[in-house]
Each structure stands twice: as C-alpha cells, then as structure tokens.
Length: 168
Image (cartoon, rainbow, N blue to C red):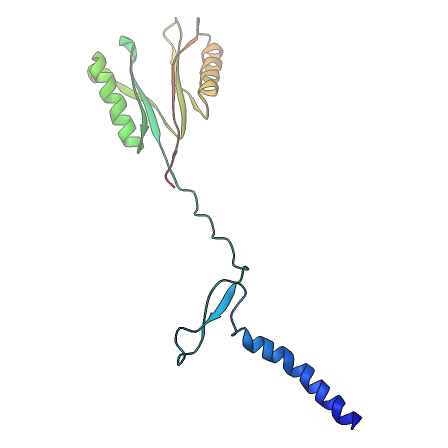
C-alpha cells in the first residue's frame, strides 16, 4: 500500500507541472492566452506584465550645406546656408555674389556640409575660406593660414554654419 501511494505521489508531481504549462496556453513570456470564441483554439495576446518596452525609432538626420562665393578683386562675398544639397548651396552663393555686383567674376571658394565656414581677409590681398565643425575653429584655421602665408592684418570677416536637421 505504501508503494502504491509512493507511485501515485510521483505521478502526481510529474503531472502538476504539465498541467500548469498547459494552463498557460503555450504563450511566450509577456503574452497571455486568449480565446476569441468557445469553438476556436486559444491564441496569445500581449499582457502579463512581462512585455518588452517598445524599441525607440532610429534618429534620422538630414544634411545641410553652406557655400561661399567671391568676386575677389571686387571684394564681394556671396553666401548660402542651410540648404539640402551641395549643388543648391553652390548655386545660391553664386546668385548672392552676382546680385551684389560680382557678375561673372563670382566663383565658389568653399562649400561645407554639416559644419561651418569662415572668410578670413588680410590687408595684403590674401583671403582664406576654411571650414570646420564650429565657427571658432574655422576662424582659427583661417587665421593660422593667413599668418603662416605672411599676410598682414588678418581678420575674420564672415562665419556661418549649416548643421544637420533632425527629421525624426
């Protein structure tokens, strides 16, 4: 009799986990069994407090371009900033230079993408159009080049930036 109780106890302990697993409906973690109608098999639906947090959407950025065009002998500067393509920035800078009286002498000296550009001029006819991540760094690079070339009275005449725009 004791042996029979022992066998029944072992069988019961083996069946209990199976019954519990069957009661879950075979759903993965974070899902609960759900039966839409009595005559249809159960399915799973979100719930149970174990669901994962939604994944954040990736950040999407749109590049922005800037450009500087000069009619150097006339001392005219045309600029463009925050445009969606390099070509658009080049054309806008040339148009700005021409509108200021530079005419056919206007030429694009510098384009930059997602950064900054500067114009450094000197009293000895030299000028520099560096680009960098910040306007301060672009001006520093231009000043260094101006001084290294032996130009006199180097000074920053212009700086601007075109930074990327977050789309999402």
